[in-house]
Amino acid sequence: MNLLQSSTPVAYLTVSDRGRALGFYRDTLGFVLHSSDDFGDFIEVGGGLLRMTVMADHKAHGHPVFGWNVDDIRAAVEVLRDGGIAFTIYEGMGQDPLGIWTSPDGKTKVAFFADQDGNVLSLSQAAPG
Image 1 (tube, rainbow, N blue to C red):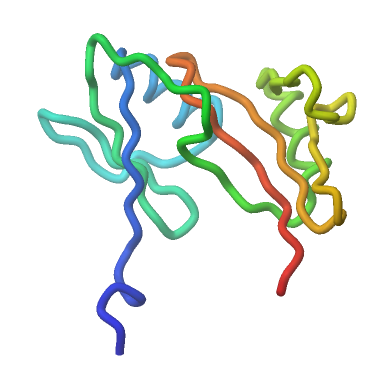
Image 2: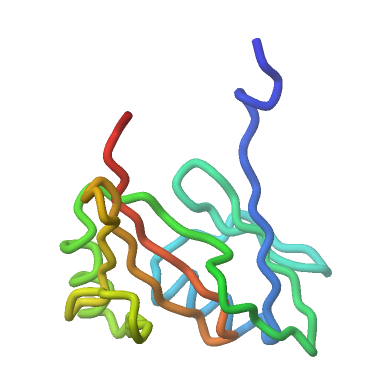
């Protein structure tokens, strides 16, 4: 048995305001707070954990830092938009009006949005295989 294969994956995310970030991930996106300590919070995300730590001078990068693979990206985008999430449309990328980009071979679709710290998050719909 592969030790890592049977372990819970953890992704790390830096935020500048702990309360605001918890509000977004827990209340807006609907994830459950797993545990907290003096240094950050663990949020349950689909069988894994997202570890949020605070860095007051955090500056987000322009690339995605975390994402979710979904079965129906159009439905997922619409649900999140109805919940107040704004999807990012990048000039020249060729996204549709919902902000969904489709790969040239049509097998992958991706949409981008950001948390209040500017951390880029994504939804993807990847064809199996």
